[in-house]
Every structure is written in C-alpha cells, then in structure tokens.
Image 1 (cartoon, rainbow, N blue to C red):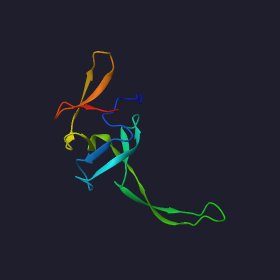
Image 2: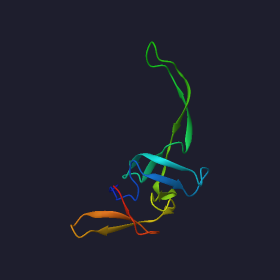
Image 3: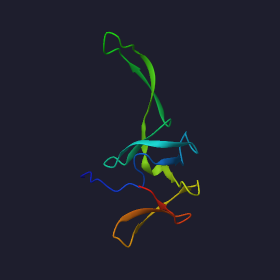
Length: 111
C-alpha cells in the first residue's frame, strides 16, 4: 500500500478543538501537520515525557515535556467568527480560488 498525500481539513496555524481522547474539549494551535501520516501536532496537547541528554558543554539535560502527534480525525477546526468547532467545507469562488468554509455559519475561513 502506498501512502498518498491527502488533503487535510486543518493546517499549520489553525485553532482546533480535540473531540476525543484524554485531552477532549481542549483547544490549541496546530504547530505542524503531516498529511502523509494523517497526523497533527497541537500546542499543549498529548504531552509526552522525554529524557534528554545534554548535547553540548553548556547545555543541561533532564526530563522535558514535548507535544506528541495525534490523528487529524480527532480534531475539529474552530471557526474564528462563531467560535465553535465546525466541519470544514470547500467552495470555489468566482475568481477560481478554492477556499475552506465553516459549515456552521457559512463564513470563509482565511487561509
């Protein structure tokens, strides 16, 4: 089976709400999106404990918290106008540009 990049409903910089799992109903900003794996990294969500060695003479090692990736199907985009988690629709404008649209209030989501 070949991993084909697919279009995702969220992208870097979007505000999303988690809809399932241990962080359900939390909101955060998408830091990175991985379309090939279908995963995203959300700020402050799915924190993992990492034991890090010091890499340089002046650097300190220790236990740090880092965000882990989660499946993009577990997040919903939050519309900036209605401030609600929403499904994402797509429309083609008169000038031929494709835009994402909020399914709750029919507002164009700025890309």
